[in-house]
Length: 376
Image (cartoon, rainbow, N blue to C red; front, top):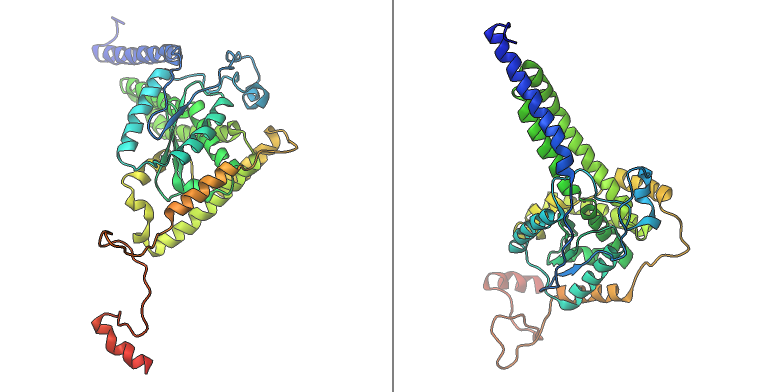
């Protein structure tokens, strides 16, 4: 190199440093992928509960196993779901989820009915124990009329009150919950974040690689978003397959939510000021940021095809329960307006139900003349 001109020597040295930086990034990936943290447990507090993973899990299968074995229902708990390239340990992922959950709780009103919370948490616990989850789950219900459900990294599941009312049976609710649990179990959020962080490191190294590095960086700037978008689609596919439960009920729930979303959008297009979700601060932001819905027709069709491919037929499925119908009735009763008579000692200003005497003038002054002429 000492025989090269000073300018060319500088360029070669710069490109050598860039290549060395890229090698360092690549060699660091196996270290980032290590995840030796053990899952922690938390206790039930307030109106949320923590559902722990199954105690019967066995070690993850080796990489020589068939890739399709992750969808084998007979190997639940030892399919290695969520293992692989991830710079977040389980403890770090849980801490991240706790921080995000704290923000959600601050800007949303949570449902405080103990009977409803107990039912939803029990259903979530049943699903988690029959999944590949390696972390406990904390389940919370948002007091919102919108049909929505989303999960956060580290095992946090949020369900809107409106979703519980909108589904037809327990199997539909369980299918949607299982889908979100599968997202967390497969660690889609932190795996995507790891890929994005690694690309940023790689992109910084390319900045010092001269014209060739610039070209690679520009091409990567186009390819990287497409790669992450494809990973997002793959994550949805994986979550759909790993969800289990009654497959047809899950499809019916997707179809119903899709139809209601279309109806809601049509109504809001004519009367945007009547959106009930605007009364819940920051709710739309969080639900849109972390939810997988509304689904599309293509996704529904794909789920139906994959159900016939991966899930074995069974003679019967658990579709509904009296507990779910009781909860649904309880929610409907709580939403219904209540009219009552004023009694002695009642606070002034509450809703009143009373009989209007025949001939009693209850119209505003400006409407009396028009009403009188109409009745003649």
